[in-house]
Image (tube, rainbow, N blue to C red; front, top):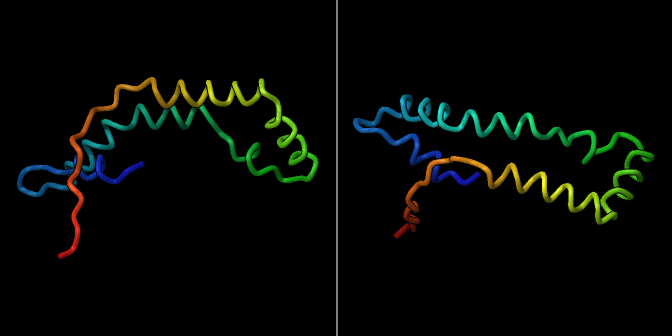
Length: 94
């Protein structure tokens, strides 16, 4: 995740960053929860045994598994109601 949206969500008048971060947390909670529920790839992506590693690699080589992984990730990544943020200017040191 880019830092720009976090900082934009945290900006508040009078420098109340605590309120800004709390508001950002509330805004992002539903979206983050969907990702956390939708995937638990640890055991699959980092198998603990050679046999499971072979099985994972074999599955990744099949077109069906590739399509299913892309489709499931795409639905989580594109089906959201996240707020839009203006582009943050890039600050370069003088």
